Image (cartoon, rainbow, N blue to C red; front, side, top):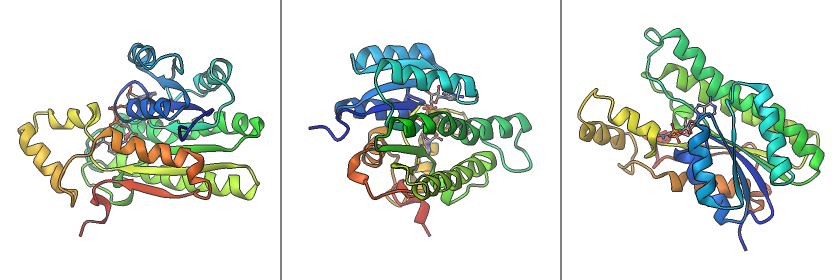
Length: 256
Ligand SMILES: NC(=O)c1ccc[n+]([C@@H]2O[C@H](COP(=O)([O-])OP(=O)(O)OC[C@H]3O[C@@H](n4cnc5c(N)ncnc54)[C@H](O)[C@@H]3O)[C@@H](O)[C@H]2O)c1
């Protein structure tokens, strides 16, 4: 029996990277999954590969109307929504002085306002379904240990941590059986990571060595390692866990 048998999940950023790995593992664990992404062709191709329990919908997480459409599509095609995973995100370099204003706003819009709009669209629907539910938001070890070279990203992920806790408290105080938790990855081998690795700022080997060194376990993580934590928090196995943030970062957030 899978950890998510009979559950319906909506996963943003489902076209590739951590979102794709999470969707894949959720399906293996018995869930039906709606992959939501701006890269709709990639999301559809993955949904086709994953089989009848996966579907795809176009979603720009910055657009509330598109969120309503995605939530309705999940309910209509797959079943009552139990799980929302806010995984879509971007990371663009820039310290507080250099960061381009458009990049700052884009990062806050996608990484912080995106999950806010998603929870605003999905929570009332999940509540109305009357079943136990879970929200899992993806943060970063940078939410705990800010980094100078990514000012907007640090702020967006720390903001999302506070927002996740606020939602967890709100649901608990209102007696709504929906939990809200967060997973903080370290550097994970995905297209996002590769954009840094192959940025040309240094050789890919040196960039990898330097990224690995910021984690006491001295390596880059794999998307499947993050997916396992997301699935646990999304499942009923985490039934008394809410407002928690769970690191999958090789110790990166506690390094001395
Ligand atoms: N890879 C890492 O090293 C790392 C580390 C810490 C946290 N994270 C976080 O994990 C999450 C996933 O990262 P990843 O490495 O898989 O990234 P990725 O770039 O490999 O994949 C991100 C996905 O999000 C989608 N996306 C981007 N903007 C969107 C938007 N406006 N609306 C809908 N979809 C959008 C992209 O199309 C893509 O499919 C992000 O929130 C990221 O901040 C990643």
